[in-house]
Image (cartoon, rainbow, N blue to C red; front, top):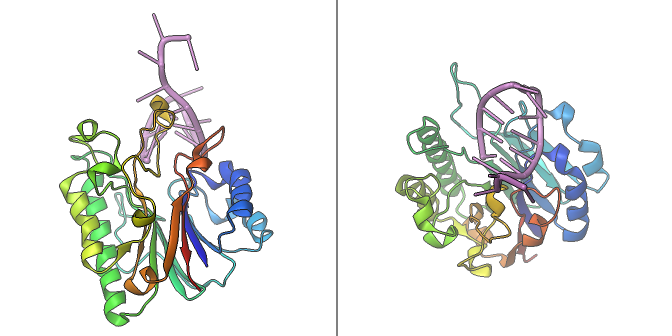
Length: 263
DNA sequence: ATGGTCGACGTTCGA
């Protein structure tokens, strides 16, 4: 079984490329982030036409997450227990959707960006991650053999090699000790970055800013991850970042990340 | 091409 995650940066503007990518990538399950639309705007029919069941969680033109599957899609959950919201008054944001696909509990996650170190979005980001970690630890406590994939745009570069120049990122988000500690918490809980061993750095990224010719200059960030529970990690036989998909006109600023599981 | 791009509910904001 082949599972993947991709921040598409608007599914409506990316639907042609998404269709083409699905047809050539042969994935069974895809976690999508930043659909940037509501259900009534989501191109369900085109994806169903390719043989995928679809679960989408989108509240407005920001955020939005989805799971596509051609190996079954059950027990859909919008958000996780106690997921923090944002705003005044506090309102939910569509940043997490879970479903069981082919025996794997898949989560499509769009972690809050943080914006700047002194922005209120930063404590929101950390609280969001802490709450997700509490949930994830509980899932493993309930069933140590659970097959869980936490997939998505984590908006964290856990290691220095995950950005092109640490000096540039001094004082910026994505690399701060608090964010890295939040990410490490998932590893400490038993989850495994199942892609890194198959796509080692340095210079291996999943995101390149549209501006400043970042892609052409190979100035990217590794911020999209698939964290597998121990049982899932034991099934991983390969993984790859599809850097080709970042090329050309109409590309998302993120590349898809694909993980191959043994049957 | 005085070299900051995308996408969205856009003449502005979020990434």
